Amino acid sequence: MKKLTVVVKPSRKDEVLAIFESCAVYGIMAEDITGYGNQKGYTTSYRGLKGGVNVLTKTKLETVGDDDTIYLLVKLLEEKLKTGKIGDGKLFIED
Image 1 (spheres, rainbow, N blue to C red):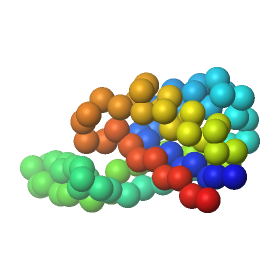
Image 2: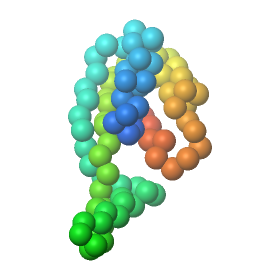
Image 3: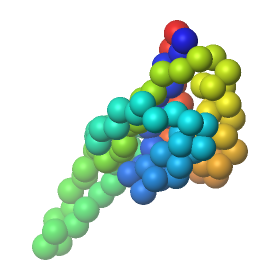
Image 4: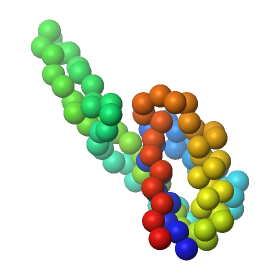
């Protein structure tokens, strides 16, 4: 058994859920989280004053399954979601 954690932009959540469902994975936990990696947040401007926001909103999806199913999910997620740009997301696999 393995645990798969997927961290993506909120706009990509439906794509990840569709991939999970295509592999008959229906036991999923989802939560909205904040954090940053290489993107380092973004800068905002309000009434001429610049301010930084150092966290971004992300969606974390977790599921468990047998080794073959998890590796198939990882393969499909990499094929369909990878653009090669910062912010594609992260995949974590645990025993």
